[in-house]
Image (tube, rainbow, N blue to C red; front, side):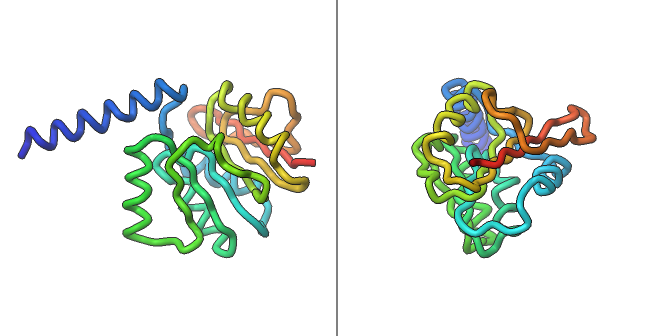
Length: 174
């Protein structure tokens, strides 16, 4: 039994490491302080889809579903272990407006998105910036944890009073 558990832990860790190397960033949870700062920069209400690109362990996705109960929240995660964790968590305490998608968020259709959140890395943000330019509708809001869009000025930003002095950026799409 102990050997089976150890093997499962090793396989799970290897899966996370493999996916992290493949996509360039690992699944990192959004801290409570950073979530609060992100919510400060988000609209009070959202009419339309909300997409979290790179949901990781779901810390932000579940909070988004709770904060915006009348909007569909689509949480994208490519890594199997964090996605499975989110899926199990959703089974234990369902949010009817939360949809979990396992896959590459670059395949997401963002034409109906009104709010997009992300916590990625510079190369990922670069790819997303092109996607946003092609797909996001006028009036959509993007809120990013830590990493800014390179060719666009934020409409607002905050520095969180945490150990890392985390930056949070808001972009209003026009």
